[in-house]
Amino acid sequence: MKKLFFAWALAALVLSACTKPVAPVEEPDNTKEEEVKPEKPKSWTIKVMSYNIRVPSNETDPNNNWPVRKVGTPAMIKAQKPTVFGLQEAVTEQIKYIQENVPGYSYYGVGRDNGGAIPSASGEIMAIFWDNSQVNVIDWDTFWLSETPDKVSKGWDAVCRRTATWCIFEHKQSKQQFLYVNTHLDHKGVTARKEGLKLIVSKIAELNTKGLPVILTGDFNVAPTNECVEVLRSTMIDARVAAPVTDQYNTYNAWTANGKSIIDYIWFSGFGGVLSYHTVRDAYAGVSLISDHYPITAQLVIKK
Image (tube, rainbow, N blue to C red; front, side, top):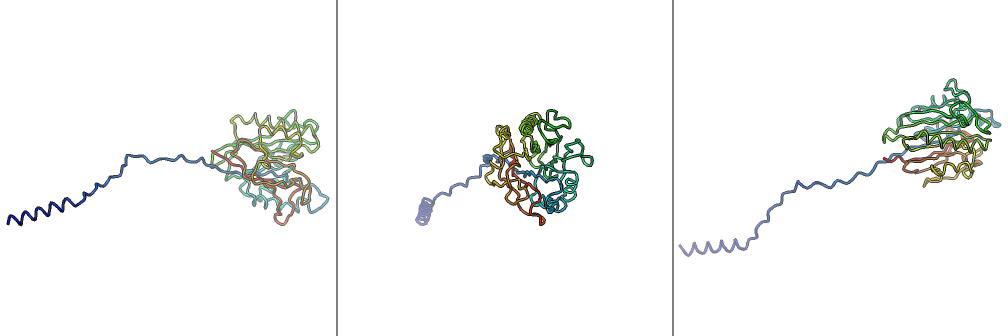
């Protein structure tokens, strides 16, 4: 009986010696904090448009009269969907027509010949429109391109009274504010164009006390190489030149498909850049030329 017990004990000892111990299971260390990667700054874009709509004058070709071509303007705006846009040469009936046929937009502008708002506006209106779903308007006003900018006046050697309209907007998604100025320089006065742009640059500095991004649109009535444009180059960027996707089409078409010259502009500063610039040369609502100027657009980046 002792031999049997001894044999059994010896076998148990050998078996235990050959068996590997089981490694303990490690509990997860919940005290370690996960690495938090910094969020990339968000960016948004806004689409800006400049559009000389052409006063509803009697044209040599009756097909270019406003009653014939007007249906093309609302169709173009709805297709392009600008966040903000500036009109040149607009009069009361044209602004009312846009208001009635393009829902969702509001505007500001006064008549250049009396400073009155619609319906009492006299003369062309340098209007700024904005998409109410994308931006809120904070402030606005108009000044005259003259030696006395705060009152209705004609400056230097200009043939017509000329104005610049400005609005400060807040972009709803980013909460970023920006200053937008829209103008139309004189078609004859060389000094008026040069001094007018100088005044605009000075007024932008005066208005922009918070260092906001700035947009300047307009019909300058000069080519990009003209000396009067030089005043902008030290502080602003020409969207047509800077955009990676761009074109070089003439903006003043003079009722011809190929056009005659580039005289319409979108300049900016303080934005995160420009993605694209486009000369809008398509037909809309069956109208091949909706004005004697092509609208131009630029996609600007708001970075915050």
